[in-house]
Image (cartoon, rainbow, N blue to C red; front, side, top):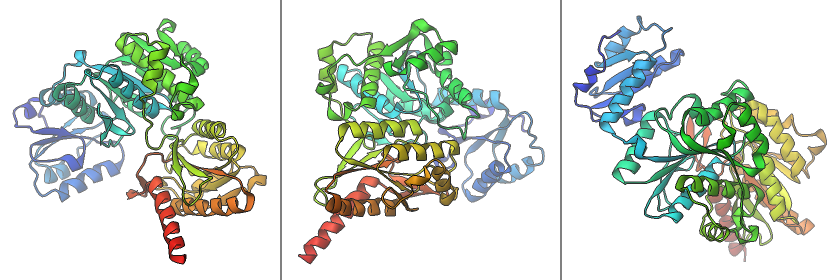
Length: 500
């Protein structure tokens, strides 16, 4: 292995640092974690052979168990400048270069960290809005599933992960806290990020957990290990006096946290403390009442204030919903009675909450639920989602949802295991592999059903939410459910006009 140390890079003119091939430019330092899989090494070699201008530097991380003695010769034939470190030195080198290129006064920044299985995105988005409404001079940004959102409320760019890796995260913090002089950031912190320690080196002023239910068992070996990954945020990345915020409805979760060793005195249960009917309509559904109460508690802890009932109601009246979260889409003029509702719910618990909430808001409508399950993800939740959808819906349209490398028929087969045999009737069940075809067929059947039964329908499109793509294999294809619905209605209207 090369004997070069950190000084090898400090003596060179570095312009940037990245861990992504597509961001490499002249003078870039590329950090690459070489796993145990042979594909990792072959992917690196393949990239090196494609690049014609090799005017960048490469830092490799390898485990202590892996020997690269045979591969070093191949690497030298492709990469003129590289060094190999084990994990500790790799991280230290990365941190030092980041400090030089993207300096940050970590003790001066303010961070709110939100984890949980469901509700992170809505809660974080509401929290960032509240921070900016409470004090517009102390700007706050949002970071998470939706991307990066500044104080203007506009999405500034997308992110590859809910919680970015350490290099991208430092660049984001440098941009907002140093260049744009922001006061605070509100982050969604995923269990993957906590387990992989992507937020290493940062401390949070306030932390909260929305809930804890089954998900990600494709990554975490058990529910217990999944839970312990969530607890890392509270045990290792919260400031010494930081409050731990938990929704009032999650009392059992607070007991679970205490059993896991968290200080009971630091746990604060959020409560709404304002009149439901004075909230915007999107916040009047039960799960969003939890989210807004949770968000109020987070901002009170950050600003060290107590909001009166009147102040809470005034702030709530100014809040905006986000695309893909209980998003109602009118079907007029195609249908004046029914509507579609888009939500990102993709776990059994989230599905139960969204369907139950929809029934609360639309008690006289039939509920048709269109959904699928993601490929290469937790397969154990698939029959649970099938069971939940069948128990709460009048009709199911079972389809695909980001199948990735899996056989979509196998995914559907897994979901069907949870659906009672008696549910498989033309009245209750349709199975359409392609999601766009499923959406369009559901819309056609809505019109037919309205004419036959004179009943209004809510078509729930669950799973994708705000996503504007679908993943098939390794390809991301343009796919936005709202656009599919609106295009379908426009075609129908055009056809009617031509016929008349």
